[in-house]
Image 1 (spheres, rainbow, N blue to C red):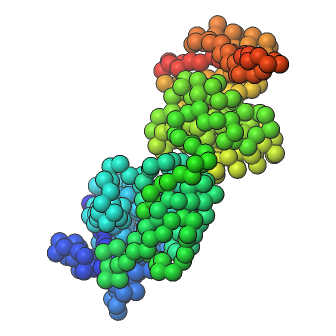
Image 2: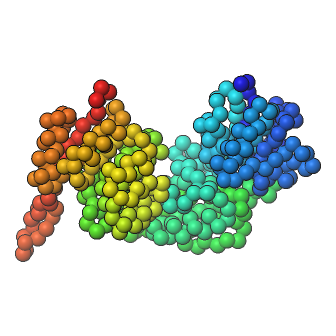
Image 3: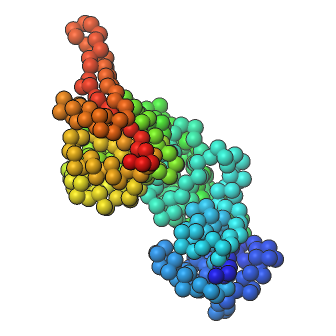
Length: 405
């Protein structure tokens, strides 16, 4: 089928922001689809204009129903950046539509703030949890965030205060590029709602209190960063484990027997768009995982409750990496995990018992790979003397799956 769809970005000025070529696309269209918030002032009495339907699944179905008719979608800013343009690539052949971007809210906000965009974290919390910002709240970082409406600003301010970043400067940029453009500035701990519009983007200049917890994306967060009942891959071992798992952009991890969720959470924090599924049978620990994923900025961590072997089909198939932190002697489970792992995927298993170590030795004999022993000692005191007291030794087996396995 030939091209039938154009996705056209508009600014706050609406159709007045279009160039002559884009305006011609709108004039020639049989159907013009736009957001409910701005469509009334765009369409006037023109019957060709229809509101896009929510939620997103309904909108996609709506757009697909127009296939073959000359259709224009009016979208805010750059449709490829957290927009409908990027979504459509998963549903419509690429040669059937074109995208015509306008300046994104991020570009406009960076220009207003005089911030170099390439050095600024750009995040969308439009229809998403504000906890996504947690991964970016570090001293000296600058964040531009798309919001749902004015209420999002209050939620962000409360989050910053809770993280002990209350001195962070927040600049609310309202209706950028429109006739009613304005801005409001305050620190997070001095939040006030006056002057905040529903169409806004927020710029955050992160300033930490002296006692703020520092939580960088580098694997090896302090154990105290996680809510735990003790079922936690400890900091030094976790860092070594993540090094062998190799978090990469857009890749997916299965964390088997997730405990507090620390490995899956750090995997997601370490690489852009990395995702993870945490398998855990304990209801109490699942609640801990939920708390940890929100506080540490990975609310998208998927949780599967129950025995992992019975629920593997509930996770995205063919993971890029698998971590087993327990039950390493379960041959049936291991075989199922190994079969699911894609070629080139990384498999890491840790054991602290002799039985577990024996099982990993067996894996080494069967599959190859590498075996390492991790010993960690921490400072302690015996009377007036300082000593290094050893923790439980961890035996770690790691391997990269070959294409012919």
